[in-house]
Length: 247
Length: 281
Image (cartoon, rainbow over all chains, first blue to last red; front, side):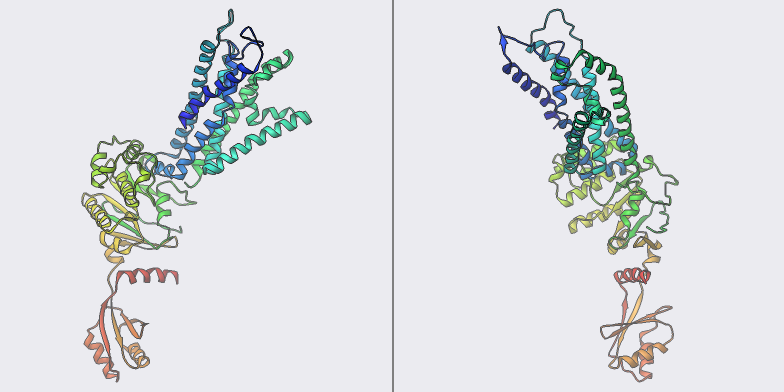
């Protein structure tokens, strides 16, 4: 599962890249619009494409957590001499570690696309836009923490995955409906959407107005701050739950 | 659980005896912090319990809990890590529970008995002074059961304190020095095994006219209880069993000729049932 997670990121990026490369008209071998996989846009494109795969690390977290409940090893670990706090911290560290790992893979993938698959354009900063890596990390750790939170409450793998997906789809649906139909802007601050806002899609980035871009830039600290608040809440709730219940 | 309170003396083999669902595992779950009690407290080694005290225990609670996709040996080294022990004795322990040959196999491929033996092995890591076994012979074949019981006796000889929960009276009687009997979450009795599970004697009598026999026996000095049992009366006495010939003579003097008269030792099984039944009533 870990291998799938690691491999899926460059593989999925490549398939998107390949699709884009073959679908748009080219003039003398050069893409008409300039490739989103070339520096410096690659730093924004690869994290966004990879973030579409959020499900895979989430499944990994759900499997790792519910396995403990299924095999009752969470119980045994406590019996053997871990405190409940220690157990939950180890698990939270696992979530953190996986997010670091996927971010690292995204970083390497972006380097590969930028340097190897595309010609490096003249006179562009190769480090510009690297902040999207941080945004990707924030999104991954938030999603994985939601998956972890649900796992500790539900304890069964299938049901947890089901509810996780349903929640993800449901929030997107609510966000889309309220924002587009009723012009409710607060939906931007829902747990899933707030991190989504940090990673705008390639199309959105290309098509939005300068004004919209400025608004987004101004909101970045708000998004990050809120994401941090949500993350803290997830951690506190999960720890509280695990410390209070019968195992 | 309802007002259960007792102390386990150091160096004893302490049996917790009770029928299925009497609260044995719940009790042990509470003292190992996997279950939360609504009220009450407990101590380990005379101190408030913590994860540190749990590391001084070897505990097998209910079922063997291991990572199914890891080998037996790997599972033991995880347990050793949590207990903060170096695990140098893992090969010796695996030898002891006869799992050395299969130590590289995944836990999921083990038979029920092997899983149980691995769980016992896990308890022995780091040579803890106190061992807690919840139904340790579950799922073992007769040879395995005998082996585990011998092992428990050997461990007791080394001076270890052993807490053994079981619904098997015979098991408790064979290996324990102390016993607590639980039923429906209540502590019925606790103490030295010889005092709690003392063997009682009874006399079985029968005669052609059972009604007259009952009336006569009611007059016999020292009779505690008469139970009717398949055309036989089981007679219990207060202070020691009188000589059988005295009973015979007494009945004969009342004009009753006995056609059955026998001294019986009450089995522990029936003693156990009696203790738990009395508590229910």
